[in-house]
Amino acid sequence: MNTIIAIIVSYLLGSISFSFLAGKFLKGIDIREHGSGNAGATNTLRVLGKGPGLSVFVLDIFKGVLAIWIAAWLVPDTVRVEILCGFAVVAGHNWPVFFNFKGGKGIATTIGVMLTLCFLPVIYAGILAILVIAITRYVSVGSLLFATVLPLFILWMDKPHEILWLSLIVFVFAYVRHRTNLVKLWNGKENKISFKK
Image (cartoon, rainbow, N blue to C red; front, side):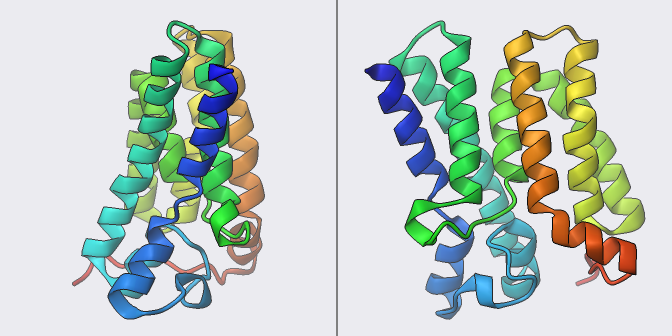
């Protein structure tokens, strides 16, 4: 029973869209109707500014961390339950029940989940992703690179196979949620992020 509770709570936690809430509280808008139409940190940055964008990014990461903590608290010493809760919180972020199943792309929440489960592989993958974003100014490219190389670092560092499987699932999630970005990249129409004030 605790396993089911942990999974449900994790999904509901993931379904809290901080990007949507920021848009409503700060400007009275639905963030999904502005910018790229995505309810995530990058679109929040573009539409609302650096402060809200960074806040949403940190809060979305914390959702992932909290889901793993909940799993560890309700069902101690069970990696598989942590994996299921990690899957549930990312799925909740991507397809939130509170917002008509129209959410974000799950990268920040994935970072939170995987940081808690396998710290070093995420740090290495994150460094590569940040470098690529800094060079290309495409957040989507950095995000997809992160999702792509993370399983490789997990495999290389010999982490539990359950964690590897979760990384492969969120890899698929990342590419499914970024499919429009891939089309824009192919057509040379993808938006770049600006580091200027």
